[in-house]
Amino acid sequence: MAKNRAVFKHKLPSGKYINTHRYHQLNSRQKRRINYRINYYPTVTGITWFLVGFLGFLAIYSARIKIEKTMVSFANSQSNKIDKKHQPTKFQQISSRWLLGHSSGVNVPLNTLFADLNSLGALSICAAEGNCETNGRRTSLIAGHFDPATGILNKGFCSNHGRGGTLQEANQWCLQHLRSRSFVIEQQFREVGINPNSHLEGFINAIDLWNQSPYFGAKFPQLYASELRGRKKGTDAILSARVNSFKINGSYEQTTLAHPPICPYSIDAKSCVRHDQSRRMNAISGVMEHLGLK
Image (cartoon, rainbow, N blue to C red; front, side):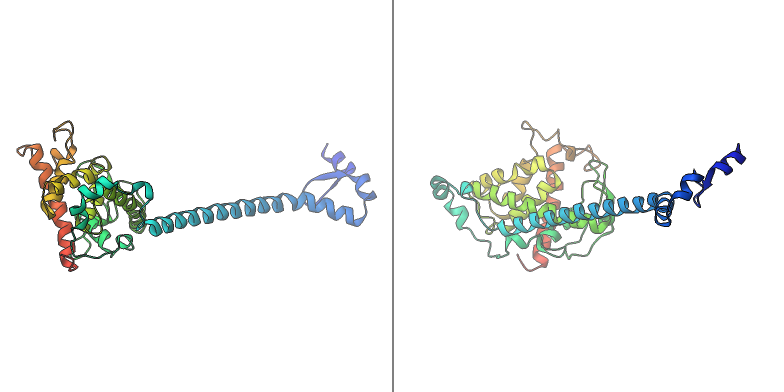
């Protein structure tokens, strides 16, 4: 059988066979075309599809980066503007005039709080999380530590809630995440009649509490406004609002902060929450003092 194949078939360089009679009828150009299709076409096709796929991936990745940069730029450009639908009503302007008129004497543009890792907002959240000292020096926890309440591995200055990645990636995620959220919290402050520029320390504490727990952090602006209307000021109003944010149906027992390893069982739930929130608030206050803002 092998001998007959050799007689009636012409063997090409690739090892493929073609009818000998038909092969001799082809001119040299047709022979080259057959050899190319058999020997090189599959390889060239594979390379072509690889290049198409690679270029498609680059196009999608570039578009994603461009969209993310556009969203961040938009959030920054809008951070000092008030949407008309969030403007306080006339009643709010009159009843809360003393709130809006109060000034902390600190003038820090809100859109610079998370401009980089050394900005006021980033250093404050880093210190509150225990990832930095109040002087800005990073602790070992910033590279990775297990959250005492949830047990997940956190990285970055804001403790990135178990999202993994390198330390640099975690820090960049924290900057973008908190930068965009600060715009939302700014609107919430203005809705309840508080000028965040005049209550900068309270504003940063609101961001920190939201970073610690979005559920409890959402309650802070309204509670903070209530404390200010009750004539509490400064850290007294901030701490009271932070602690009261953790109430669930009038009790503190249901929050994970009220149990070990945050606090021993010998401490009641409210005292445990107060201890933790006081520590975070004092860390933020320490950063502001170190930067000469208090």
